[in-house]
Image (cartoon, rainbow, N blue to C red; front, side):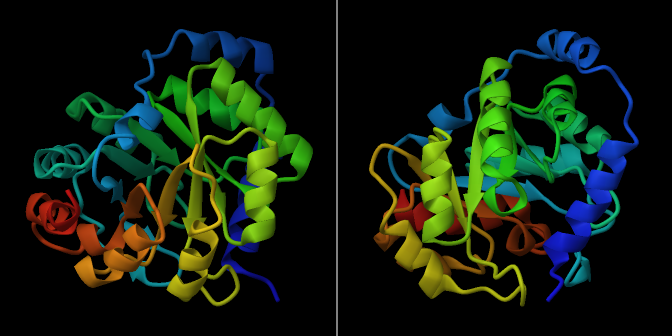
Length: 259
């Protein structure tokens, strides 16, 4: 069965195939980008950390907040106690852009994750150029050679990697590539439905020496408690925040019970 991820990756790979920039030239540009902030350090503090997401739409639900102004929204997240900001830069499926990330990076002092579908080395370079402090690597989207190579390149450029998994086998692959920040996406790749029982099960097998991030499906404090009990250090929340109407308060309501 073809999944949302299949369609998105096909689009990104087609774009990558059509991108004829020379890697060495873009690498030089990337090395001159803003000095990265440490996502790992930001998520390693006491209590539950929160990555608040700038997300205007989704493939499954359509528009969430199409008029969202990234810089002011991100500043409200930071005021509410967010530890990092995730910015969707995919235009076709999520309504994002590189300009959204650039605006957010200027508006906050906390790390900014480029949330996109990394399929080639140029994607990682572009993340550093636009001001990202970290990139997303989706294990299900990459073979082992790509996963290791992209992780090494990002590290060379000073970027942290949030390595996203969905099951135990993918966690093993993430650990093999040297991942120090591992996300477990609660959303099923086929049905796009949230499966918290799987996230809890997988989270409990993650080693203590990695930063553990639960992604997707957080709708309120009640959905956070099982994740904290399963040992997660952080949660990444998008939809519940961008549809809240009061991002500052929404972040505080999720974090305060677990501080």
